[in-house]
Amino acid sequence: MTAAVTISGVGHHLPVRVEDNATLCQGLDVSPEWIVEKTGITQRHIAEPEESAADYAVEAGRRALAMAGVDADEVDLIIACTFSGDYVFPPLSARVQRDLRATNAHVFDVQANCTGFVTGLTIAADRMKADPAVRHALVIGVEFLSRYIDRRDVNTAIYLADGAGAAVLSRAADPEDGIRSSAFHTDSSNFESVRMRGGGSSFPLQGRTFDPAVDLMEMNGIATWKQAITHLPKVVRRACEKSGIELSTVDFLIFHQANLRLIEYLVRKLGFDLSRTYTNVERIGNTGSASLAIAMSEAVQRGLVKNGDLVVLAAVGAGFTFGASVWRWQLPAAERS
Image (tube, rainbow, N blue to C red; front, side, top):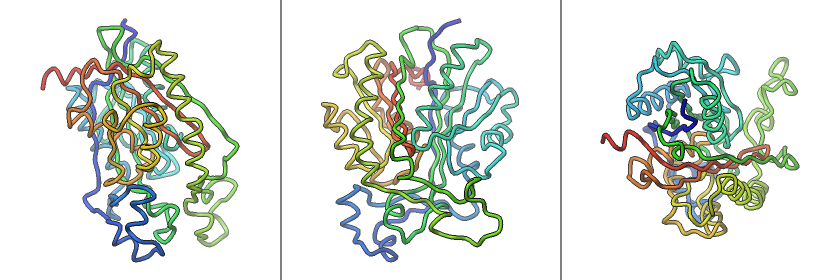
């Protein structure tokens, strides 16, 4: 058994409907220009009422499997990373398994908020390294965040959107390829800064009417910014140290797409320029645990990530949690295309 695990295919799926800042600002007391100044976001993708998170997860998964050249019945593990799945339970990953007809796959969901995709990739790679019976893993980040926000709340509406991204993990022949290491950190001192309480066991739905103050997302953007600039660079550096590489040798970085201004700041703080990263938050919005997966899929499609590159994936999520992983990129499908 080889200990190397690499990403062999990627894919994503976005809503057709696009909401620009001018449309959004009809219900907000801010201007389109103010949103761009603060976030870099000019538009966001919003799912239609009849669409579901599981639908998007399945489509992104299909596209990733097609790129990898892997049949669904060869997948032995499916991890769905989400905090806005179709139901409280059963897990969204079970629906994905059913609709893809991946009958051999063990499934579970990961709820690590916007750090979910980095977390899911690491869990899947660790599982494959520990068990030679796991041939391929499918990791999906998916969110339908438009369903959980008040469109009149400037703290959430200007950012949050919908979409799904996926990656197939397969074994690599060269032990230097694929995932090299991951690093994680949690600072729970600002636990209440980004939250949605309604429906949880401390705020059950029974016996009360809908209350937007409790039943929709709340977000403190300043607290998120401070947490991200304090801890995310440290986690990136630690992941590089664990990989035995210098940060300066990293070829490409892909971040959770929370805020373009935040990404610009982080890239500079790490000693890089924007040519070493890829962003889509300006036209897609913040799609939570799907955002890094979608950005990675688009970067691969555009040829920005090349075989042999050292690539860092990094994210920050509510809680606050931070995660980064280092990969020596080797996409087998790229050799066939």
